[in-house]
Amino acid sequence: MPSSRTSYTGDGTTAGPYTAPTYIDQSHVTATVDGVSASFTWTNSTQITFDSAPANSSAIVIQRTTPDDVVSFSNGAALNQEEQNTLRLAAQYQAEEVEDQVTDNDTDITSLQSQITSNDTDIASLQTQVTSNDTDITSLQSQITSNDTDITALQTTTGHATSGNT
Picture 1: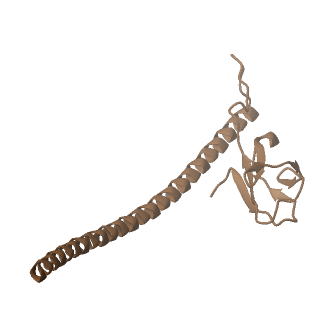
Picture 2: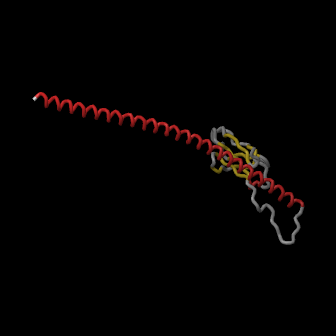
Picture 3: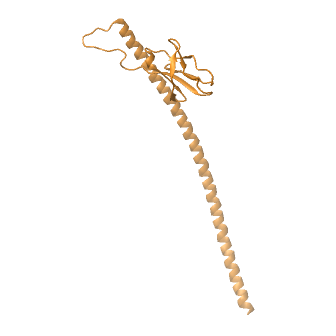
């Protein structure tokens, strides 16, 4: 289950509030509606409201992306407890974000495998049709050869009959 994002389906009337994933800073959270960036405001520390209600059946995704530079380092400076906790949380969030991307890629790969299987089935069906058409063509060629033989025989018979009648 994704933990770096929350997903909803728009109903055409509800602008919010929608629950956002946990974050270190609000600037790490973005939202899209049908894959297009959407404007929103924070209702409180855990929820957002869109500037306008997403359309009915639209795909709403509220995504967290944690940057690498959540804590600044200085040579010789000690990291205090708050900075250490922030670094730990950033590492956890980044790991969750990577896990969600891997899950997405696995889903994409499964979808591609299904498409390939479907295409393989389509190709096999086409190969069967081609084989059937090849058989039909071979049959027609045999009929033509047989008809040519019949025509030659008729011409020969007619030629003999004409010669014999004169």
